[in-house]
Image (cartoon, rainbow, N blue to C red; front, top):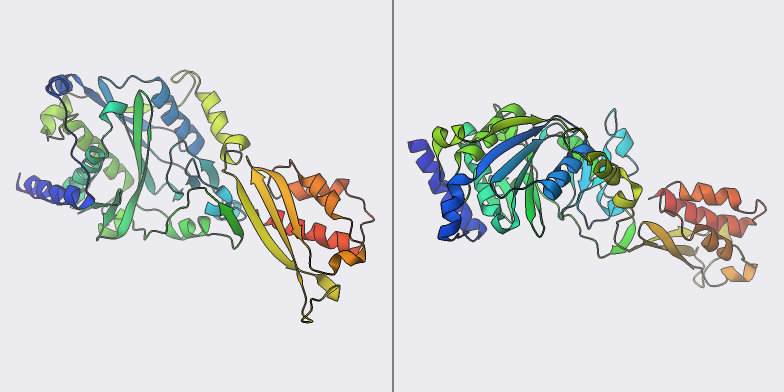
Length: 397
């Protein structure tokens, strides 16, 4: 009991430092608390698209009024970006296939927030409740209590993230609130490969202007670095039992007695038999239209030196051609070529062909190859140069 009293004192400090407002419920709400059951669902899939589909299925179809759910799930290596992010700004897209033996998947989730890398060293934790009972403070406390009770880890909440040692992030977090249901998911770093994470999230040196949500740089730390006894199975057990022993609304510790009254741990099988319509949701998450086509409008610019001394500016130095592409819904809507003074005097006529051929194409490394087959093979040197500039911009994507 002394150990738990110390943890409760610590949690009070956590909540004060995080400036999270306590949630108050009416007497009617509190009278219903004893009727709310809890379940811990554990996904048997390690596929990010499948797990996001299960999460979305529950959010759309499940009635959480008298049944709160905690879902625990893991993924094979992947980069998960937020709903309003630009994948070309957030991930090392040209190298994802080479970072692990089976590559790293790139996927967009339905909630907001920033990009993160995941592998089997991550534990994803999703709290499902009715929207009117959404309570991030409650969820953070369940995580903090469970980690402290099982491992003695003194976590804190900072800027709505779970941290150790005041500034080392051990969990990202995002949420989705709908008219009826809500979920709040966290990604706990247990034993994540931080080298792969750094490679997967490495930014390309390209100029992108956009209103998309940008990820912030965070100092990451695995829980196992603080306590070598921490493993994924033990964290699943600790968080699951803490969830079941905590009262549904008031965050009181009901101990083993309350935990035994809950629905317990349940392995869920991500199939159509269990979740009718799941395949359709999964297909949507894997689609180009969702992952790339949902990207907010952006402009990408690169400059290229004119080759072979074809043109020099007034100072006698080599000039550059600047290429700017406008991308909307993942497709090229416009191309602007800023040609150096004097370059047009060579009778340059390839700009119209390049712009016409690329407009409407998906912004990807393959778009140029499709265009190249349709271009006149007799382009003069200056036309071929501009086309090469466009190829380099596309290849950088």
